Image (cartoon, rainbow, N blue to C red; front, side):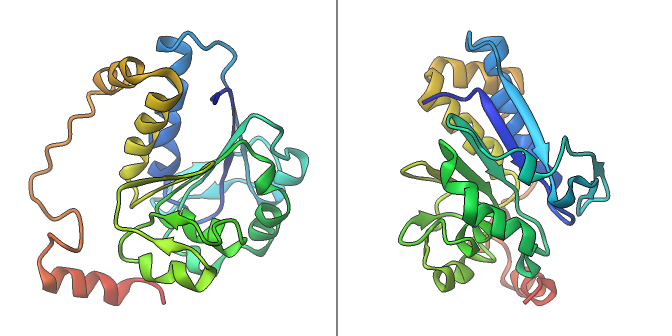
Length: 216
């Protein structure tokens, strides 16, 4: 496996950390993994700037139609609060060209986009735990794991888990020492002020309120 060409899919309403978390770890291969030639491109439907859920605006390099995944490409698909609405041009493109990538990775509800494109049929997949129950409708098998490898498909749970996924991929591609070096360089040593990072641990009333405001 390699991690040289990365083609990132962007769309309005996506979570910015779903992209920047794993991509920052991928980019470290140039510095610590002795793998020169790392190249990242970003695309969005129509090639237009996208506004993330947090309000950041990202300017893509182009339109997916002009940057189809060549052999050896890793294709990250981020999640977003409004993923349930789906972008037809994006799912159509993923359906037509996603299987041509060497590796497809999805963070958070990005797994729903892959599944809606028919790319996760019969495969185990992670996603944001508040949305796991939507995967079976698209033929995927939901799991509560934080990072799931199933063939060339790699999926991660909610938002911050994209960093875990990036480090896990580095470990498989370049070895544990490189992954550990990147983890140290980024000071990825999570110590949250409370233990409420999953529906299993958060107070039940908090989980219920969050489910109530999540899109159907």
